[in-house]
Image 1 (tube, rainbow, N blue to C red):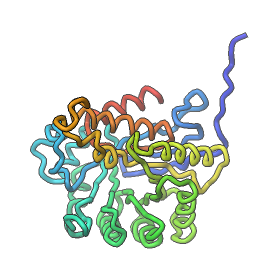
Image 2: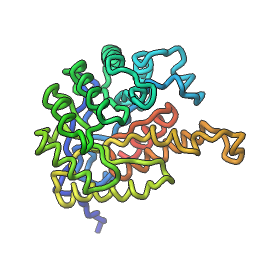
Image 3: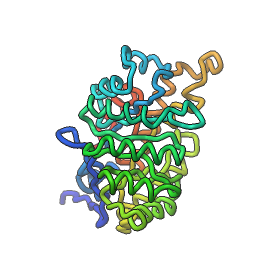
Amino acid sequence: MSFVPKTQPFSGKINAVTLGTGDKAIVLGGQNVLPFYTFDAAIENAPKIGVEISDAASEWTAPGLVNFYAGCTTMAERAKKAETMEGADFIVLNFESADPNGANRSVADCVADAKAVAEAVSMPIVVMGCKNLEKDGELFAKISEALQGKNIVCMSAKQENCKTVGASVVLAYGQKVGAETADDINLAKQLNIMLKKDANVPTDAIVMNIGTAAVGYGFEYVASTLDRIRLAALAQSDADLQMPIIAPVSTDTWSVKESTASEADEPAWGDVEERAIGMEVATAAANLTGGADAVIMRHPVAIATVKKFINELV
């Protein structure tokens, strides 16, 4: 008698959320199995990779990044180049320079960059703010208005500003919104409920950023949160936790010591760029196997490696 494996697809299902428009539109979520459990059921939509384009990218020093973007001086030029990157599925605009405690770039300048990128690329666009609640609220609203019809995602709405961000991004301009919390299943669920009930944001307009960290930097909290959220969504059919997850890997992995310490300071650690690539790949893979439906990355070698990882598992 031949062996017949027992499959375990779940009754619960991750929401399918569409980003972008036209031929390059992508869908996050849609699966009713644990990450890469293709032996239980087919993965409806493979995980996706976003390429980070920062308004501070001129400060990046890794040779692979400098060489890849050689000749690019604007966000639009870098985004156009990023579309050619092996493994890229969407473009992520990181407006970190808008921080009032940093360069304090104006909202108008950021909006101009976003419009230029939208005109230059056909891939879906995700927008990251500067982590200042007041500035981000204005930034997301203005960019959502300027890019109306592009079906973008604004990352992220937090508990303190979810009503205003949800209303301006989703209800006023028909975009998608990211719900950002910090490695806590209860906070993630509470924020999703607030977006749905208090801000009247439809379920298919919400993705989650449940928090991440570079591997070795408290990632066990990320892993346990991912596991609990996915099991609640699939095994318990918890509708308040069935939103797709986007993990912003690059901003964490490129800032830790392993990615920044010079070879003179840490001669035993080897090449700085290779270390950073390794951190980015390991962190992205950990997020994906934990349940993330998309990861945001930076280096072309790391992105190509993780895309191969995804393709071989789905």
